[in-house]
Picture 1 (cartoon, helix red, strand yellow):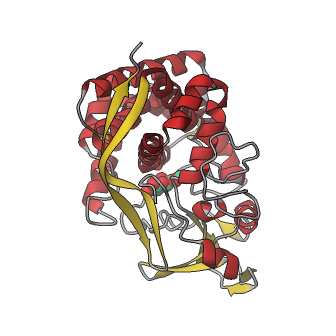
Picture 2 (tube, helix red, strand yellow; picture 1 turned 135 degrees about the vertical axis):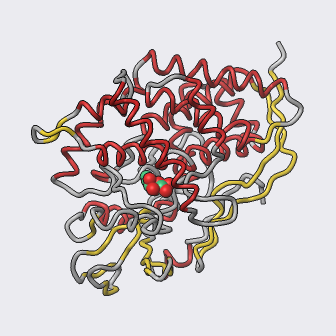
Length: 387
Ligand code: EMZ
């Protein structure tokens, strides 16, 4: 099998039961595996809520390392809609020409640098750097701040061998608290300042609410973007024909990005808490238990996607749920898509081929399922286009 392949560990369970079981820190999760059921459940916020105890809808649960409610992510309608409307225009800024140009400058510089090296470890030297620098644009703060985030390493809630690490999480929380104080003293044009100046129902957002948006912005877009970028490099290293196609047909880049998000599914699943006794796939589920919407499984559902285990760069019909579904769909999606668009177009313009030397897979342990999400390390060489 190709080193860049991401196998689908859910296939049998999806076909046979539609469900999977996971014992997450003694708080069981029923995983919902079929595309149709995932979408239906995502819609039904009355029975499947997000506004549970902070951290409980995340799998693995973050209840032991987090008290701050992430906003708008851990809220339900109608209040969810009010906060979402407040932040949505800011998170659409990545669609502006000026933003895209700055992103292009950042990514081009990094690709040029990579082309000079004999060996690049993609996660640390490439994906983490792209993600951190691009985040300065999303927050609208000075570029230099990225150095601090790069120094934290790839995970914000985990250290290399512990699934959840409170010490690591505290670095992020303390940092955000300080930034909020800074923005109160010296307001600027940044996201913190915008949030601090905003009102809901005639009342200013509290510091805790501002923190809730900021923690989400930092945590939600870190591993996910890093995995998407890294998996894209791995894929292109084994599919030079795709790199060449993107070069000759740049108009398919947007389709390629959607297909990569489907195939990579950077976020495996997201939970909900059940509000009343109910049923999923004819299976009884009790009030106050957890279910998860398994995006990664839904994205390989053969009743929706032809050849689901193949990355078809120009896939025509692609109703993937890689960015979630319904009112909670990913707030950072415009930013993430723009990073991937710019990355693919820059690579196609500058890179002839990518050589893969060695790599170690990063496997997410979901008991019944072992899912490859990306790599622990992956060493490559970028070869330039010589004219
Ligand atoms: C949460 C989540 C949001 C969570 C869309 O996903 O991403 C996870 O990586 C974080 O750990 O706290 O932000």
